[in-house]
Amino acid sequence: MRTVKSEWHAAFYEPTPLRAFAAVTVPTLFLTGTKSKASALAVARLVTSVLPRVRIEEIEGAGHMAPVTHPDTVNPLIERFPEATQPLLAGDAPKEAAHLKRNGRQPSVEAPFLAQGDLVANVTARDLL
Image (tube, rainbow, N blue to C red; front, side):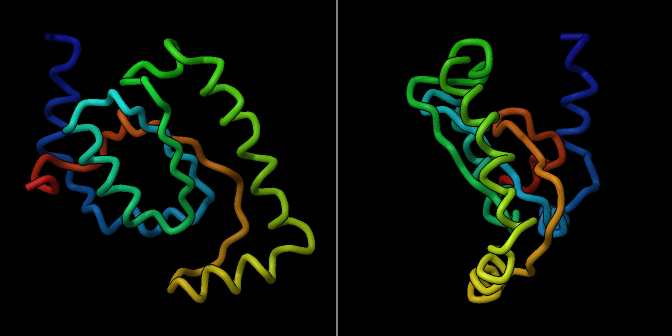
């Protein structure tokens, strides 16, 4: 428990409000598992609801340690994700921008960012209430 003490502090007292994640405009791959804990899935729903350019992948039968327990599923998802965002650097950028604007989001061309649903630390427990 000593090793996770600082994580608990961050979970309950991190000052970053959920709405701040709306400023993360890079393409984001957000992985969850069907066996993830309810609390982790609640955080995942909150965070993915405000991330403007998120792709959510749920891994069947996986929990918190999906990269370790399901590498044959996780690794290809991560490997393909940067390629899937590359059209933004070529001729598809106007189509992507139009799609984002129709959905009330701002287009952005930046490098991919990866996150795993069970490892999000900047959403406080207060956001879950």
